[in-house]
Amino acid sequence: MKKLVGYITASYPNNSFTVDLALNMKEAGVDILELGIPFSDPVADGPVIEKANLLALQQGFKLNDLFDVSSQIAPQMDTLWMGYMNPFYHYGMENFFTKAQEYGIKGAIIPDLPYEEAVAYQSLCNQYNQSLISFVAPTHSENRIKKVVTNAQEFIYMVAYAGITGSGKSEDLSMVIENVKKYSQTPLYIGFGVDEKTCQEKAKGVDGVIVGSAFVKHLIDDSLSNMEKITKICAIAKEIKAKINE
Image (cartoon, rainbow, N blue to C red):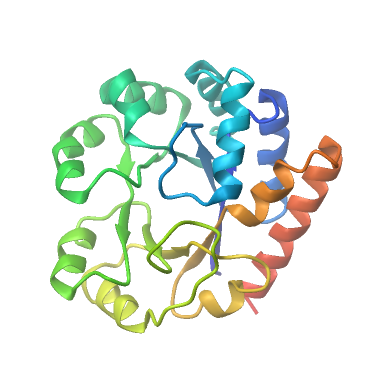
């Protein structure tokens, strides 16, 4: 069965909502949670997730909020932290990994950490049972893909197109998929532009999909009550999980 990875922004509108949403998403078919760490300059993300980041920061998000919600979510579903290098660097990678191991976090997704720099943290990851998720893109050569995926853990994040999340572009990824499968048995999941309309097509040839903006657009919709947000997001999760496994 193909997997569904769901991204939500931590602690917006508050910590208890994040926990409720995450656990309801699990019941709706989300296999792995990407818990987004709010940051002021989320360079890989489109306007929807960027707005969620800024709203969380405006409400006073602190790393202790991330740790609070993680301690309640990670024991109940596979969870990774998704964020940018700045917060990790300032808090300290070892400090982050210590907390991650304590709460049962599986690893981190850091889009602005190049592979060559991520390698330097591999022994630290091993020490704390953490994975740094590897990225592949349509622009990568076969040699580059081989280097990036050979020792990949948890899953490989395939970017569907060059650009930012949520813009829904389309590119031929067949050669990228073929090259990844040639050098790695690690599950390959596709992200960027995946929603209930595109998921079935994008899931072809891969082991799962990563969905962010399609969920977060409801998270930041102030016309909805918290219960309505959870209902809408979970309905989309169920629909996507069913479609990618038809």
